[in-house]
Length: 92
Image (cartoon, rainbow, N blue to C red; front, side):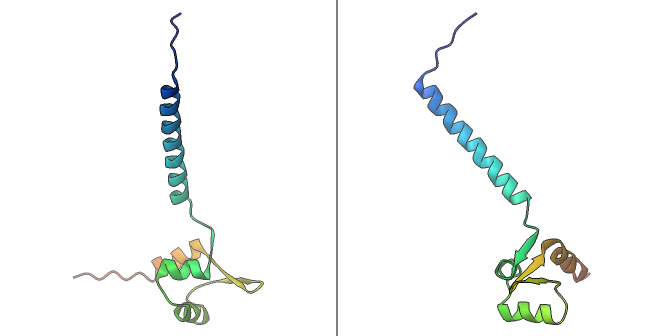
């Protein structure tokens, strides 16, 4: 059975490759799994709207929300559903 000598350079190279693989896995998992509930500031950033516009969308019933202890939460799936339902497809 042949033996192979592992040097510190080999270990350092292995460590770098391992860290790159872990970073890649973490990036893929964070982009693929989105949050179930969004807070107002997250939704404003996502939709690129002002606080007033978000409040108007809540008041007129366009966006469903849940208020718990003064914090407003939006179900990400419901927001996606509203966006799809209100999508306009212009045909030229």
